[in-house]
Image 1: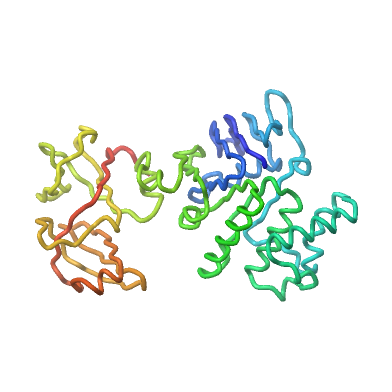
Image 2: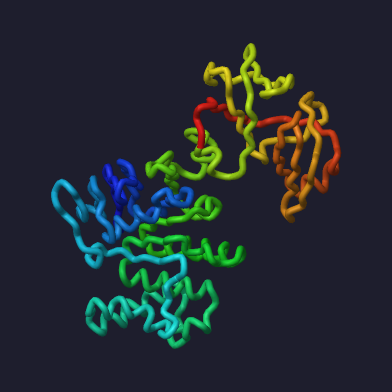
Length: 358
């Protein structure tokens, strides 16, 4: 399969720099997620990989082949880079049958007829669409259309596929099914996949590693889902992945006091916390526990049942906290209602100097 390597790539549109000195390696047979807020340069980076735009600096490798280099004046055209792409809207041609959709890219490249037959049959089998060859897209579900788009990408390249927001338009149940489908296809074929999305949850479920981009076009952190959740490199990554609470605090004698409050939080500061006087304390909603013995008291302002969990919005001396509680635990334990006074315990709070912002 094909690895991918970006080395010190920068891309600008006029005076606006979109990608800044970016380096990233995607390993063979890996699913790499590239996530970040809208406008951070995710799609721009992929367009450069595909050969649709030219970076201003840097080198791009696919496997051992240098496909783009400013210094060496190399720019391999898109059709020779061997990349399959699946877009957000599938781009399945509505007037073509499943079979014709899959065969079309190969016909454009004037591949021999018997080889087209072999590749198309194999690709449809890989995505479990055998028997649907004569169906029109209007006769297929959204998930089936997506599998046709993946089959079409596979005939273009079984080595490297780019999925650009491929499940955004699907409902929640179908999104879950497609994540499993993509994992199964990748496991069977071993294709290297680059998955572009702003959907953090899907990226965490699907990808082997994740690269989180900042709005200025560089990469904040690369790691497995566990590394990023447990050891975010800074406040930006902490706040970008998942839901988070932040409490403004000042330091006093090894303790943290809520800003504009006399409330001192009942835990000692870790030894590695900056000595800076002002800190933002981050705590995940699932890392706040109701405990009647805790001296840290808040009031439940709102309780929301979400099926598998309860969300409580708790006022802590003028600051709102979101607290998640597993529905089974909530039903088996003490029941909490809006207006209840509750004790709070923070598990693994994070500390960030005030000048570090998202």
